[in-house]
Length: 219
Ligand SMILES: O=C[C@H](O)[C@H](O)[C@H](O)COP(=O)(O)O
Image (cartoon, rainbow, N blue to C red; front, side):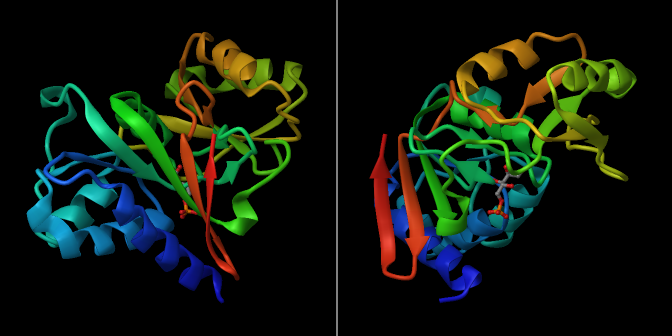
């Protein structure tokens, strides 16, 4: 199976986790696009969506799915999103598509994070994928210096402005052996909007697309 077929497979499989009548949390990315297209087939059975990016909002609305303001929603049962890397405990790196901050906000109001990914995303230790860090533009140089002191090699993602007006530093060379500690540490630096480590808001379930079909990992 191609990577696109694996993405379509897990996008479809995630429908089993959608609670009928509920508001669904929707992530961002090419795998989530497959989920959104699948969600459209049951749109009459949900109460709408909370979206993590302008791109996903546009796609949801094009399918006729109502998108609600996250400030009007207290809790949602399920948030479905992809990942750039996921480890065997459900910790993830996210933000390859620059949507990490809003993704974390929506994940935080969800009872359960359902990660959908093809098998190439499963890793023993996070960090091979460059870690995205969203920053307030005026803090980029100072945050980059701090990341270098941690042993990373940060590079400003050229030409990218996030939905929040932020910039992204992509950090290579980190071996993230304690994701929760690194997430806490980087999060508290002045000018950091959010870091693409999802440990506090880690996945409860991962639907992994493999050539043998969908493998379900529970954490
Ligand atoms: O900012 C983007 C998100 O974190 C995506 O969930 C992540 O990059 C995975 O995207 P894709 O499904 O396209 O590999």
